[in-house]
Amino acid sequence: MAKYRGPVCRLCRREGEKLFLKGSRCMTEKCAIERRSYPPGQHGQGRPRTSDYSLQLREKQKLRRIYGLQERQFRSVFERAERQSGVTGDALLRLLECRLDNVAYRLGFAASRKQARQIVSHGHLTLNGKKITVAGALVKAGDVIEVRERSRNLVAIQSALEAVDGRGVPEWLELDKGAFKGTVRALPAKEHIALPVNEQMVVELYSR
Image 1 (cartoon, rainbow, N blue to C red):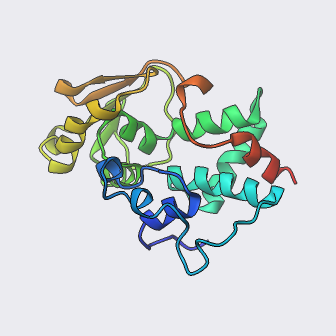
Image 2: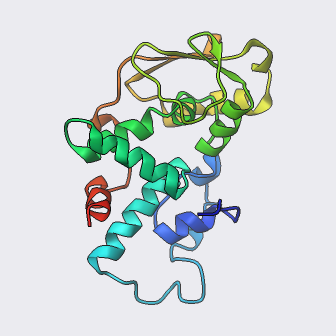
């Protein structure tokens, strides 16, 4: 599937939910959902389909878009979750949350996951003291993510850290703003992942 390069606000409108793809803009009255809560396109205000498949597909698309993954990447994460013990849906959410780009966003090093992915790929972060450029790398308990010394004066990173207090840092992460450093205290549990998604419907879709 080709990479989506259009306006991301259309994705939020398509799913009918705030996916927080544009950082702080999503918290203001400029958010597209606030102004036009119906799907984009000429048929956006028509009657939506309500089949089981369409509902499952929408949940999958919503989750995939929140984390900014293409279909092949998302399917790969799901297959890995299937191989783990326990509930597949919980494992899927845990794997998505433990991606380095998501952790950088959760810690406040970026205003959105898309920006976090760019920060990681440009080599502005270190993982346990080593430079890393793989946005999909999985963190584990005890890992330390830090902004490199030469990157700490970047406006994007500084402004994101200033705004992180507004959305908060999850319990399973610990942030030291003064040192531009975050620590993974533990792997996230289901109750620590607050998303407007029914992950069980995603499992049912891929199990068809």
